[in-house]
Amino acid sequence: MLTGKKTLGRKRHVLTDTLGLLLGVVVHPADVQDRDGAEPLLRQARRLFPFIERVIGDAGYQGPKMAAAIQRTGPWEMQIVRRCDQHRFVVLPKRWIVERTIGWISHNRRLARDFKRHVRCAAAFVRLAMIRIMLRRQERCSA
Image 1 (cartoon, one colour):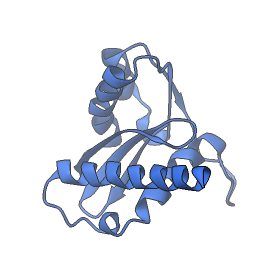
Image 2 (cartoon, rainbow, N blue to C red):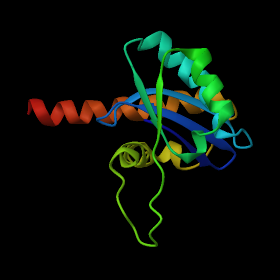
Image 3 (cartoon, rainbow, N blue to C red):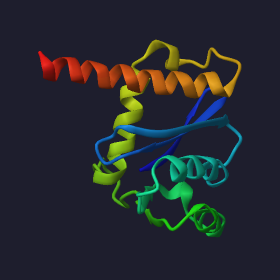
Image 4 (tube, one colour):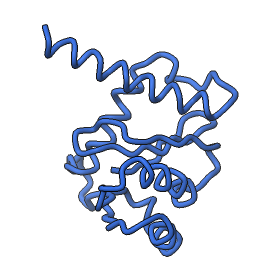
């Protein structure tokens, strides 16, 4: 699952597995297009997780520029999940996974606003938030 979420002054590109656990994150200035910001994330994911075969993204990741980035980074199958045309709320199963993960990490106070000057710090805080979530889950399971 791949998505870009705009926060004040930054855009977070997040890659998760089907459970919603964080696989990779790249933070850019907010003026970077989703298609342009996805390539560094896909390169990072290809090195760490070479066994991934399919990437699911929202409509911001479609088009020939994204298809070229997919071809440069590895043998991925790209699937785009589009919004429903109906004018009411509908849960889209694959898209909901990433949105739920972003909701989980947004509960951390440091990620509510962009306090840090460097994008590396912003990406590190996203990773720390996910580590905190996973540790709390582990604590609940072992208790």
